[in-house]
Image: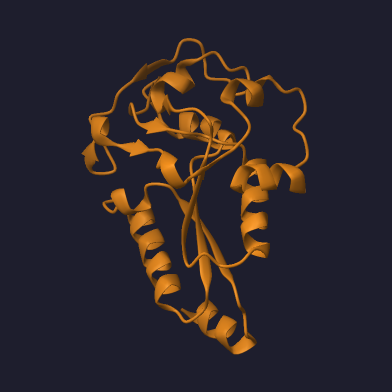
Length: 187
């Protein structure tokens, strides 16, 4: 609320916020309730805005696996998700920020859908999950039955990143974002 007050006083003409695809479906989580409240404040303010809903980043996969280890087993739900490169998220947010406000939500995500547990199960050297670890499905995630959760984009109005998961994890060095790539992502 304070930021919006200062933006109005400064004459800001485009508020851009990065949020998460599926926020409205995950209201049982305190983190997502805070995201919902943030988006509500933005929508109710007098400042034109664009809210970018992004899917999970490839860069978060190792962290997700690490925090999911319980008793030597990686416990992840069979949640559908569409990971994308953080570089692609940054490029898309930058392009949206310099464009006209949409006064709504723009969804961005990776070009492929995976089950989270299956993707982490693959032998990605970057993730460094111990070979003896097994993946098991937790009974409940975020207060809902795991099987009902999806963190994917609505294909009709979404922009897709250009990196597939295989391309991302196969690259020896990460390319730098470019304005050309950003235009492709949000076009």
